[in-house]
Image 1: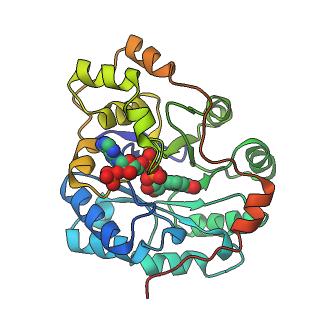
Image 2: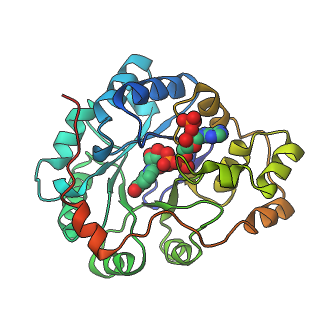
Length: 281
Ligand SMILES: NC(=O)c1ccc[n+]([C@@H]2O[C@H](COP(=O)([O-])OP(=O)(O)OC[C@H]3O[C@@H](n4cnc5c(N)ncnc54)[C@H](OP(=O)(O)O)[C@@H]3O)[C@@H](O)[C@H]2O)c1
């Protein structure tokens, strides 16, 4: 397990488990398996509707809270809710969050960024995240706020390695956390079956998923592959016994074709704020 140091001095594991699209029962199982197999970092969100299940699995795993790095995201429909942070803590069953994100830059993102800042100052939130902040949203954030986030979670994989955004983030020492690191549920095969990944999997005697996960860590990214399979969950954390050579990182770079899945627009963001999370009862 490797850790990165965030721009506020907090340490964060660079590999964790993603829980998007995992129904509560699956999220519980995946988190429980992950924590039993050495994971120290989990990523969830209000909108995934599985925060309670994630919290139950954390408790049942017996892992000490201080040994775990927990990240979650406030969803757009909650941006006006002054209790959004406390409600998130309650669903997770914890009394602090290691990294709390503004999930999407919908029109009211400034309100929730201030709410998270307030929780950060009180120590309820140990680090601040923004997610899907690119282009003008990133510019506005840098211009308008003195306290900057530690992490920006964005779509990032070998097909779309976020070259432009990385320049901005590097200048401010903000870490990039890759979502859809294997290209996303239902879309992984194009990447995992590519010649480049298959060639390196054979060369290093690793699985394609391990090659891509390793690539993220060697790019300096934080990576959270999502999985409901015990085999994959174990595979994705078992990547610390090899290093991709410079020439093999160059080979991976040839996968960059600028193709991304998420084309966020001002209109899609307007619509998203009307979507409400389906919380577990
Ligand atoms: N901030 C945002 O807006 C945002 C958006 C999307 C996602 N996220 C976060 O990012 C995380 C990762 O993204 P994602 O889950 O959408 O996509 P992903 O991690 O790129 O892909 C998940 C898919 O990869 C498969 N997989 C996992 N490990 C594998 C391996 N070793 N070999 C082969 N296949 C493997 C999974 O299948 P199995 O279940 O069979 O393993 C699943 O179908 C999410 O879970 C979530 O926490 C954030």
